Length: 228
Image (tube, rainbow, N blue to C red; front, top):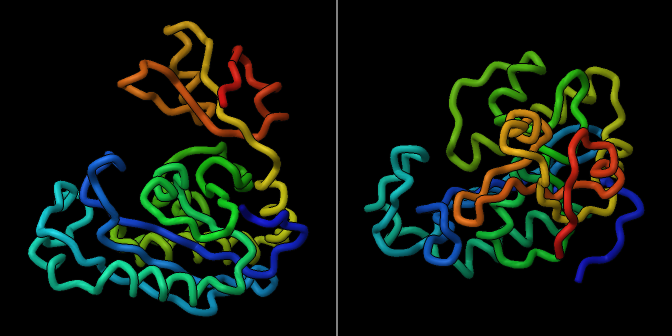
């Protein structure tokens, strides 16, 4: 169980790389974290490591991690121990598409915020890749898709938000409003509208879904159903 958050001084920015997309059979092969000072909008400390496992990485074309490196990486227990040490002062965890990362992450004892769908970025609708977010804020991106490079992009996006005159703590507290899982009840021909609202398609269950603030669900231009 996590404690209620009344104020945010530090956030843990987190990203994982995995050897596949199915948490029931695939696993985390790399994790990166940055302890971010919300008051000063600057990173404090960072850590990244590959995680030991079998030489298997179906996602190598995307993340570029050679499968042969994994049997020689550091043990999982040591890596997650270091993660917990770095993030100890943090009140929250922020990840881009956090629903994916939290499936591949052990319980870290902090509430999660999704920078893709929970945070209201100025002049930008929710959703979209981290690279597109950075470019929309006028930030250059030279590389992406390794865990530490993606955490660095997210860190720079938050710093830029502060440079634009926005206080980060109120934005993050707003992003933490009570949420629930919702399924879209919109007809098929409205799929573009549903997708634009940040919903994701589950090809197995044949549903559009999104975890979102309950009060925002009431404002959608189509009907939804809350699910447990």
